[in-house]
Image 1: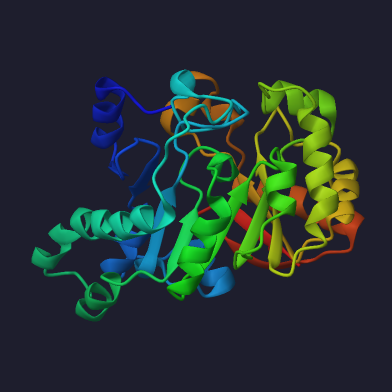
Image 2: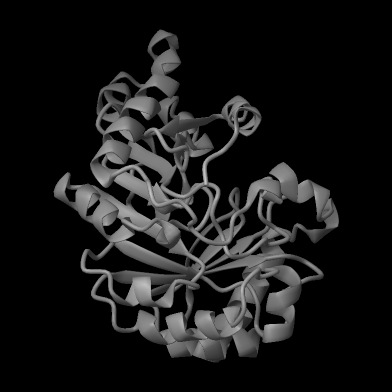
Length: 305
C-alpha cells in the first residue's frame, strides 16, 4: 500500500519525507537531532548507549503498515494496513541512499544558524545510527533483513523496534541489528487487547513467542514498555514474568507522551509523571532481578539492566 496525495501532503507537513517510489518508506528528523546540533540537549539513547543524536537517522521502511492500533500511538491510524499487500517495493539500497539525502535536506537550514555546532554539522552529513522506529512495523517490510544488512555494511548501528507479531521474520534474521527492541505494553492478554488493539488473530500468542525467541539473538536486546496511566500501569509482577521469559539485556520503561494523534484517543491524565514511571520500573525490576541503572527525566524514561 502506498499513500494517496492528500495523506502524503499531510505527513510531509508534519516533517516526513518519503523516499523511493512506492510510498512506504520515510524519514523524519528527530527533535533531539535538531536539539543536539544547537547543543541544547540529546536523546536518552545518547545518555544510555552512547548513540550520537546529531548522527541519528530516524526512519521506517513501512510507514503505513502495522498489525496494531495502539491507543497511545502518535500516528494517524486511519491509513493503517495490517499486512503488506503490494508485490512491489523499494530495495534497501535505494531506501538508505535516499533517506540519508532526505535527512540532509531537512537539516540544511542549520547551516545558516549561528548557534549550530559547526563540528556536529559536518558529522551530521554522514549519519551512523539508524533508528528503524519512525512509524509502522518494520518487520512487515519484506526486505527488512537486507535493510539491516545494508546499514551494517555502511558501519551504522541499528536500533530496530518491533511489536513482535512477525515471529518467523524475526527468528530468521541473518543480519543482526545492533539492538533489537520488543514492545511490551501490557501485562496480560486482556489489557493487551484493550490498549494495543491488535487487528490480527493470535497477536498475544505471537508476542509471547517473540519474547521466547529474543534470548536466542546475538545482538543486544531490549524490552520497551510504554506506560499509560489508568491503562497498563498495573501488575508489575506479570510484566516481570514476561521479561524473564525474554531475558533481555535492557528494559526501558517510558512514559506515554500526549502528542500527535494519540490526543484524539487519550487525555493528558493518561501521561504519567517521571516519578510514577520510575516507581513502576522499580517494581518491575524487583520482580525480575534488574535494577535502575540510568534515567532521563526530560524524556520520562528509565533504564533497567
